[in-house]
Image: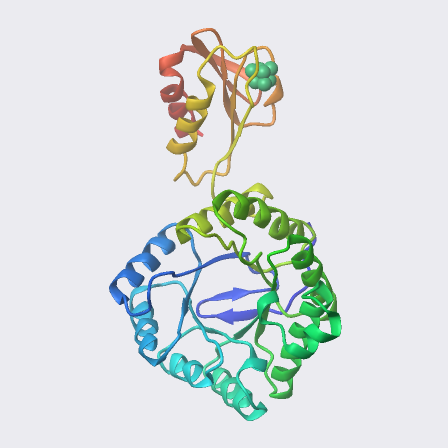
Length: 349
Ligand code: SF4
């Protein structure tokens, strides 16, 4: 996979863009006044593999949350600002690592320059976050709907505003709840500039549909080398967003500090409780950092052969299971010892 050659932008102690790893983001969803609850949620997200955490800053009181997050987290913190440029300045003073703001929404060019200068003096990047709900009136009138071209034009206009202020540490997102529009908009912007891209399908829905939409939207772009950081938007616990985002990276081979489990769909040949067995194997290996492929197959007729690419695997028999490595059977065990035997063999790898 050849990645788009994007500009590298520093965010706290990490980088977005260039050859940096593709990072996973999420956003807190507690009230900003609930500092204790928000910090607790942020720590849980960090533990779950969230590498950048965003918090909404709806008013001056919320700036206190930025301070609390900064003193408790090791991952970078992003302040999400709408309209009031003074909230961006206060968040910068509180030590935030990145500002998400749309320069066109904060008023005069002087205000944009004030924020850009303050960010520059602290080495803090800005993410321009365009989405279909926040398109400028003139662009919406020109195109008649929030189509991909309209979103891209809005993003490029915001970029231009920052460039007029001599500011280039910019990251861009161009989100739509329509997967086709979102993907097309990112492709247009990707071809027009070298700024790093924050990928996401916005308002993607509840868990299952958000997972499908995000996998298609984010996944298809990543497969074409487009995208530098990702956020799965989900009407659910943000931990699920992080799990989904890491799952997308894992599915397309961009995350190697985990086990890849392949399991068969079962069929009339299956004589073992494969569904519960596969779930148990997945749960037991959820924290394993080994970069290995583990197969969990329903039968011995096709299992080892079908999973020849796996480093190790299990194939169900009638009340028993075969353990195999690289397609070669190494032992046969009763069904109730299958998982334990597999785990012991994985420990040896
Ligand atoms: Fe059926 Fe065996 Fe293939 Fe699983 S591995 S789908 S049980 S043939």
